[in-house]
Image: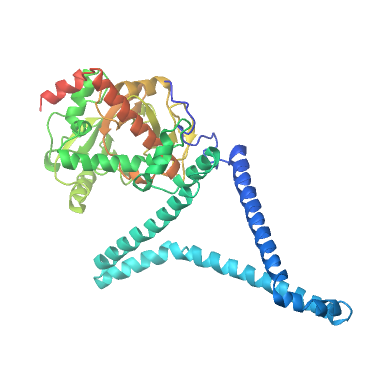
Length: 476
């Protein structure tokens, strides 16, 4: 599948699966040095003009003229040397005082906006103590107020710093604006910087793009409108109807739901909560003495143990109600009873952002990929990634084709890997913990989200009908 090869449209890629900091370009460093040198020259010229002005003022003063004979006399006596040494000493003390003043100013400036010495565990201890005291709500309210003021200080400093270059050379202005933008959220970017983003040589408004912000706004949109197209497919049965129409393979599922007391004693199946997400309450039944508790990554050897675990899931609140269904057990390797890996495509209306591969047993492991087969880190599940197998171009094409039939800018399409290829699992409109991606990945996926919105709007204007989706929608 062809991917967008524009600069900064791919997350960090490396075969060693490590982030590599992007070095400053030679051009950026040259601009930075030019700005610095020009400023130094301007300061030197200002100081020189000031010195000349002061010198001229002194030389024209009465005191200077009256003391002319004394200055001549000083040059003839030894105390002139002593005065010179004394002057040098004063200059050294003055230089030291200036240095200390600069250090103190830097320290004050650093602490003015942020106490960087506060460790996270100290803050967590404080929050737990406030909860025990019953004052956590008041404390959080104060934290929110302080955070808004604190963020506003930083934002105003960045904006004002950028504005100081608004009348400079275009190359300097663009350079400084882009530096300031890295510290601003979308709502903080001032209009004069946005205006520079639509000029003939625009600056990149990358700070405006955020996957987490886009998904959060999508949830707010659903609150306001009551529904969104992608959430229709969050229903497992409707998702299967949709996939069946597209002739994509999926597991067989039970037509009925069961209570723990009525669960059929069968093998080669998966037991899942009727209203659940993730791996909680999911059990893989190879045979009656080989049952895998997916969430706990444990093996059960008795049917009664399975029923006890299911009751425990309900009591603990892991499963909201005693209602379950069964579906086909998909294996990656039947001969070795190898459980299928999860392959999750983050799809943006016909484009894949990232792919998550998960191995569930004997322990849960994660691995991230780009659509072109590069392993990456994303800031999420980075602690101990495993090698994984990655995905083929044909598998990526399958995911993108499905996403193009859904009138939504984003949806995650989840599959299981079987011996014969990918088997559809479910649609996920809002992935869990979507806020944990690092800044680079969040911006990259945010750009894809915005691009997808634009393509979707254009396709709708051009008359695309989304017939398969509309047929499913009409049944509701």
